[in-house]
Length: 103
Image 1 (tube, rainbow, N blue to C red):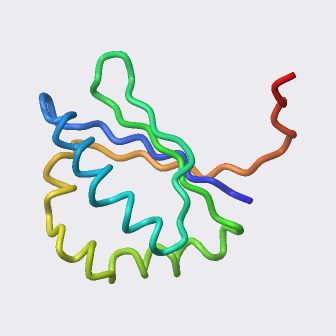
Image 2: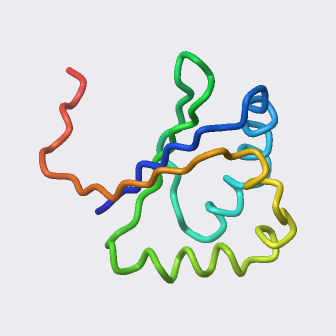
Image 3: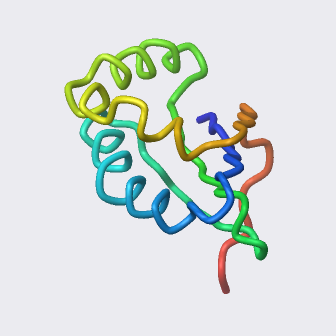
């Protein structure tokens, strides 16, 4: 399994708008396409939104992203997501050690 750690710097004062859009519209599109979102965070300054989505393999990412952008739900969003985002950083990571289990 691989994951993308996606960090979006949200335009000043727009975090609440971003969180609503993400939760009500962006997340459901991902879920409907079989792209699990496994974690979401906001930094202490409320300027960065960090989220993690997973894939079985890195090779499947281009097809899944193409399906996302071609989906009616994403097309209906238009430029609303990008209007709220000042900067994006995406890192592809793979699991190398078993995560510690709670005792």
